[in-house]
Length: 324
Ligand code: CUA
Image (cartoon, rainbow, N blue to C red; front, side):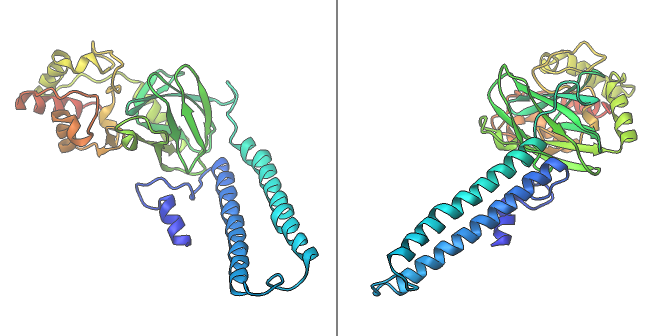
């Protein structure tokens, strides 16, 4: 049974696993889950044994294990009312005192670092207001440092969930919800939209990288820079394609005239490990396939197919690959 439970919870390299907590909040949620599973397994076992006893001794006048009406009343009051009342009260108090408190939204200004996340159909816009850094689908945080994450959306309700780090938090139009991210140890944590939000809901993933503080500072400084001017001829041609074709009407590349906010910010696209909200890896071939036909990799994706000339597509990919 345990294996089945673990399989349902999702064990695997690229799956979310709520039973592998890497923060205080996630550990509280994890242990509550195990206690609830254990408690309900015991309850289920007791009921199954009683049903079995009742069935095998169904021709007797008395209760399966003897005793008269008073024993029957004691059984109903004890197992039917008293035990559930005590167990549910304990679980409620535990959940309320420990789990709710340790997963509570941090107050504004209570952390040194704040990150704004906007749920879009179907990707995540990520902004570091203090440094002006904008990225998408990949959030970097310093390990061991609490980060206040503020989530919102402009379209439909999404739910931001990194199971190994904390509970879910819904992104609701017109509301700013907050949650704390605090990772115990460096690593890559998979996140997933946890509220059905349309055709590509299941492909609305993201990654949280918990970096050692020095690595995080270097990453942030790199992301704060504008895009470098391409030097190679093919990449320079690609920049012209980007600015001439509809790409620039939806995306921003800091340092160029492209400053639209419909799609993800591409200023440092090549520094990310995945494309299309962690649907495909960020490699030369998959980047070319993605631009050539976004709906092939992600049916329903709102990025249009531009039918670029093969030479233009090659140049565009070469340019995007310079955006480190
Ligand atoms: Cu966004 Cu589901």
